[in-house]
View 1 (cartoon, helix red, strand yellow):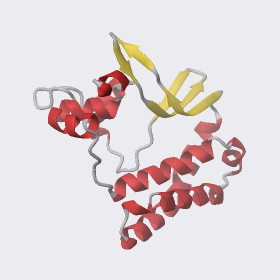
View 2 (spheres, helix red, strand yellow; view 1 turned 30 degrees about the horizontal axis):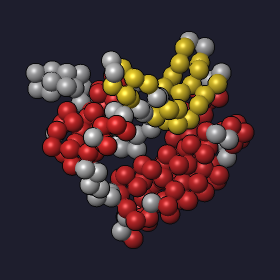
View 3 (cartoon, helix red, strand yellow; view 1 turned 45 degrees about the horizontal axis):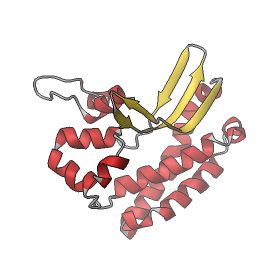
Length: 180
């Protein structure tokens, strides 16, 4: 009962339930922690760096990669327990290599936004179900809005699969897209 009173459905919980109700029960209701993984630690460190960078717009105009890399390294240190020493060094090298390229590729379009918010919270309710979620970034642009969710894995549009006979609920990325 305590769980239900404070529970707010988010995209991760929805995907977990649709994938395996028992796993949802253990992880979300009983709140048994899951194992820390290097990919989760890396993703969190990249999010830390990008959030800082986006919220300091003058850095974006300057292409100040050193600042974002400094915050990436702080994020890596914060999530150090997710890595072995070898993994930590490899992910640190990877982040230092990809973040400047990622920013350089997107900086021009980011600067064209009229306004933006990072870690944009979505508190609401749908048909009596309390919802929550966070968009990594939302931009107000000339033609409307642009929503971003940073992914640190390999970019692959095939991961966004709508419902079909084979996957009746669609892929987890599809569910997240529909949820927001």
